[in-house]
Length: 107
Picture (tube, rainbow, N blue to C red):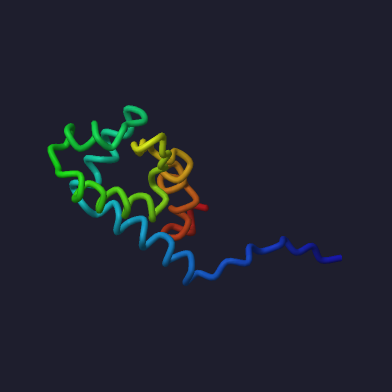
């Protein structure tokens, strides 16, 4: 009797699209700086603006890109927004699973 392992029902094209948005979000020095600061812990947007010396309007633009890519998480408390690293997503990007897309012989 032949045993077949179930395959994930994910098309390669949709996988590439998902990673494309994440890598586009990472392909900017300012966003990398923001991510680096968020590695220290949760930060209020008002404090983050001062830390990177960027007007809040420009910061909001970069935060939205990171948020849409799933790289950060946002929590609103009153009138302020607090951001933190999405550790699960960051760890996924750095995982052997992603490497399998480019080095299948090592999977």
